[in-house]
Image: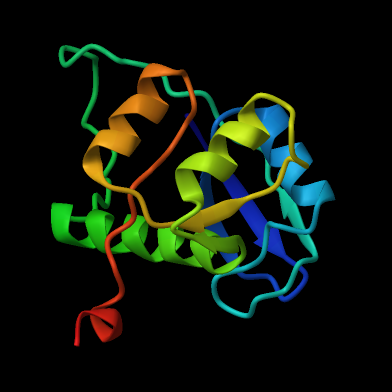
Amino acid sequence: MIVLDLICDQAHCFEAWFASGDAFDAQHAAGLVSCPHCNSHAVRRLPSAPYVQTSSHSAGPAAPTHQPDAATIAARLVEALRSAAGQSEDVGERFPEEARRIHYGDAEERAIRGKANRSDLLELIDEGIPVLPVPPDKDDLH
């Protein structure tokens, strides 16, 4: 997984997770990438600096950094996952079957969401089919 820095035509900057740069390109070309702030699909990648591990013994004072707390990171991740899920096709209870059909080339490649039990998810993962459980929206719990 990689994190890409993105910006929309309304100048909203945001980050998104993708399996690879090619996965971003494919999803972007299919119109599946949109700004979480304004839902614009006019999105482009920003240059990203590589992560470099530095020694804790480096010379000079450390530059101040702002690191969000774990709750903020988790909330942002869940928001991004729900946004991605909202742009996918809901196949309901057929999720395991449809995920297999897509993976093995028997159906059109596209983003899907649906329902699966734990054993179905584990079987999909064992087959090398990437799945990601997304927590339900709080409105879906009532």
